[in-house]
Image (cartoon, rainbow, N blue to C red; front, top):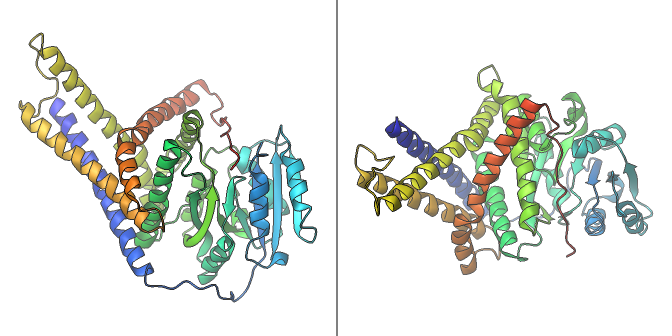
Length: 432
């Protein structure tokens, strides 16, 4: 039994490494091809009207800069409708919105003070009822779009409007240099955006709607029932809905927005706990599609998320248990003779060699992913980033294990105790 657990753990982690290598290879191929292209801002064949929605809950610190960035986008002003939602705010978010848009009197802007339920998904569903644009775009209150962000999103959906029902861009950390935590978050986001999203799109034409900086066909959203009210990760949920129809979520990799990340460990922890819980719920909800007729992209995504959030997490926890159990036994053995609880084929040396090899592979791939992704972004590939990546492996990345275990326990208790699991802690914003 013990040997079976060891073999399961090692094979599972090697499978995870293999999936990461495949994704990395796809991303490298994409960027090598893309590096030869010169990107030019040329007139689009048409400029569809876009309704941009900004859900804001107590966002007085950041809402002004975000609103100004949206109103200064390189897109015909008459083709943009902006809906600013002050959602159940207890601060002066709405007043700051009004003061900011007062300088843009000729623009189609509505400020709605909302007191409804449903969270961000509820805001988006309310916006869907009054939106006049052909496409709906979403920017979080802390996400400042780059001047041409919307242009590139629209350009991408117009490449194949019948298939590209949505397009998403990339998000960058605007407070990346604030402290060690934000530097680690920046590296994680760069890897996610420049390696995972790019590699999966390039290899399988699978896109994943992020929480911000995306557009989606308004009529199509209505057809699939809109967003799920109260969902902790409404972006992942609607991504599955889109893929179930056989349509695509296209990657507009030149579209960028700059978002603020948590600067305190407590804020980071509860943000990621909410994301982990939301993703677990989405995986459980869509797991049935792995066994019934469905789009192959849906099946592949269900497999990916199931492996990432259940199988591989369980394998990592098991590997930690094996390591700690043997470590404790070795310490005790200094005083009293005891046998190691996990010894492969009766030999601790083979176990040590396998775990050491596995550990080195994981570190190398972790650093390689970060180094490759940073090399694709101007000004990111520095010597300091190498040392930060090594430090983050032993600190920042390990925190995800704790978050995952907490999320699983919380989801189980929500089901057993029939409690509301959609409540979340507001991420604190900082002036910049």
